[in-house]
Length: 426
Image (spheres, rainbow, N blue to C red):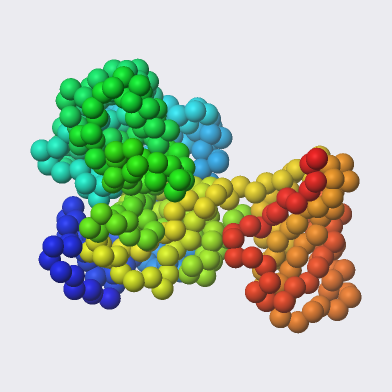
């Protein structure tokens, strides 16, 4: 749907952000076959996508038929095939940088402009050509600081490469150089503000802040506004994908949700499976990334979110889909009677019994006296034999005894949980 906005409300990095949504979708689907074909030139993707006809992957339904590759599996993949698990197309020596994240997990960076696509969230947060920002992400081993550097270079603003730590020097740099924007974690900005107050330093030039890597509760956002930083934005990014989504504002007022990046094809799937959930339902974020050096195909981040549906078009003029932001972790693996139970096992049980519309495994009792109950939404209550078959599936799949309880459709909460731990740990 094309939306006409007053000219003064539309200020985006480029015209791609203002495209008709149907045009954007057509473009993404047209690019999918080429992405799949390029990815298969890397040995890891060649194995994962073995037998896949690249030309047939030209719709979301076709994409959903491909296997999930989980972020949680990167360490094992990389241990088996250094350094990137066979998922990078560009040879190591032709990259710009190689990062080492805790794990260790190795992440590549290619040589293209704004490789991490960080200019979009920075521009939305108020960074402009000719400005000056203080970059307080770490420059040590991990890519966050260099994501900012790439975005700043594209926009045309200068950067103070402050990194993390040395709080008094951070305050002095702000007081002397008068940057207009802080980029870094929420917790470190609070430390800087409190140190500036202690030192009697004037850091009022810093009116904008772009936050990442940590949660930003509304109470802390309010604290920043009350302490001299009125324009506070969040970005959603990771060391393997780069920028995925970011907040926008119009007239100083935040718009609902987080805007998706133009080169990210995002799915929301049921945790433990690759099955897309209904629009608006909570599930795990799965990303397909159009990156020539490090293509990612149905890459499960482990984070939970939901598409923002039935919302008014964003007043910022950007027309892409929006997500609700970070809503928790998808890995709900739970230990029951010394055995791990995984969301994928719950989905395995559901697939065995087509009459189950939705299910949640609830663990109750006290430690060492655990009770597992599979709550199943069903249109019609199964008979005794069908119920016994589900109980048997629970035992076969999890190797643990469990009970089953049937619920009416719509009874289970729409919060993305597949396993819920309600045990008494007191």
